[in-house]
Each structure stands twice: as C-alpha cells, then as structure tokens.
View (cartoon, chains in turn green, orange):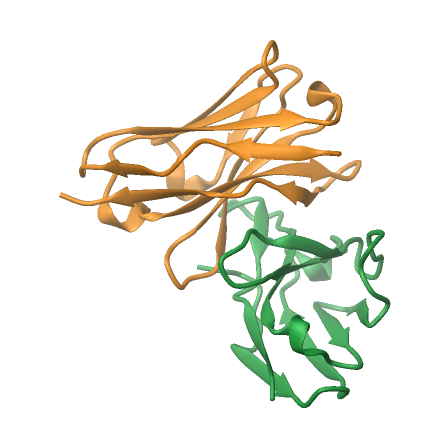
Length: 112
Length: 120
C-alpha cells in the first residue's frame, strides 16, 4: 500500500522528453522530506538515480533531473534513449505511524 | 568499491522462517544504517525496516512487526533479516540497501536481491 502515487506508465519516442510525477501528502513530501528516485532495469536491483530532490550521483547522465514542489515531485528524462526503458520509483520519508520510509507505486517508461 | 552481497534463493513452506544475509564491503560497516526492502512478483517496492549496525538498534514497518527480526555481525560486516510465520504473500525478492544521508536516508547501493518463495 504505497503512499506515494505515480502514473503506471509513460512513453516517448527516442530523443523526446518525458516526466514522471510523484504525489504525496502532508506527512511525507509536503512535510518537507526529500524525494529520491531509483531506476530498476528488468531483472536487476534498483539503482539510485536522484537524491535530495534534484542531485545526481556521479555517473548518472545529466539527461535525468528531479524537482519538488509542495506535496509532489517530478523526474524528467530528456533526450530519451532505448536504454532508459525501465521502472522508476520515487522514495521519501513519512512521519505517520503506518511506516517510516515509503516508495512510490512505480512507473514503467517505454521507449517507442 | 561499496558492495552488498546477499545469500542465495530460498524455498520455504508456509509457517516456516527464512533468514537472509547481506555482507557489506568497501566502506566502514558501522558508519551507515542498513535497510531491507522487498518486491513481490510484478509489484512495487516495500520498505521493511532498518538496522543500525553500530549499536544494533532496529525499527520495523508496522505491518511486519512481530514477524521480522534484523540483526548484525560486526566481525563479518554482515546484516541478517529473518522473517517468520511465512505465508504465500511473503514470496518476493528481498533486498538490503545501505542508507545514506544525515537524517532521513536514501538507499545506495542495493544488494543483488534474494528470491524467497513460499509454497507448500
């Protein structure tokens, strides 16, 4: 029962820009907690893509960018490439009693 | 380089317990929290809990309280996750992930995952 909501799927042609939203509430993103993003290629473990809302770890292409506003966050992929086809998850912290760390529902990115 | 290596796949019967290990290398083991996350087949990621390898303190997701136990062995830089009273809904890939960040963590890197299958 994820508390962060993402669109199930997004798609785009090579070279296009796609965005993935991550909608939370006043107990997580809206409370000021940072949002982080992970990329999961088929059959592999998740990999950190963005941390602290908008920071890229070394080795992550600058085609990937993150932002946060209010109770939502977004991940943008510009110059879409075939290798970007994967599942993407947002993650944050939640101050409610139901849990501490929370993930988004996940978004499948398809490159047309 | 920082690496987390997990134990191999397990097949368990309903009602049994499973213990998954995660061996850390490439950094000071006691300086970073360790988290466990699971992913049921075709589903999303679910946070299970956190352990402080330094003192051994733990905190678990509410839905797993009473069934999950996380421990560590500082002599081998290994953390363990034991899940008891297994049911079919516990069939999933279980990941350990190092927690990074001063207050509320992000996860980097992740172990390769351990498939636990619960079936009679």
